[in-house]
Image (cartoon, rainbow, N blue to C red):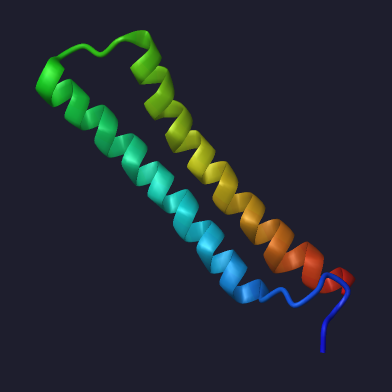
Amino acid sequence: MAGRYGDLDYSKTVKNGVLGGGLLVVLGFLGEETGHLLYGDLTGALNTLFTTMEFGGIVIAMIAVFVFGIALPLTE
């Protein structure tokens, strides 16, 4: 039976969102550390990219939990 928002599997969506956010955090951290290890000082654009990946991953994971884990199941 399809709910209000279609056939959405909330638990799978939350897990994928948290895993995707965690992957961004890890890739941002590893990219920054590897860049400093191999090249010394990175350019401002690369530092900004890796830092944005880290913070963006945290935000994506939190949004996935709050939207798909709490808000949408309560409104259905």
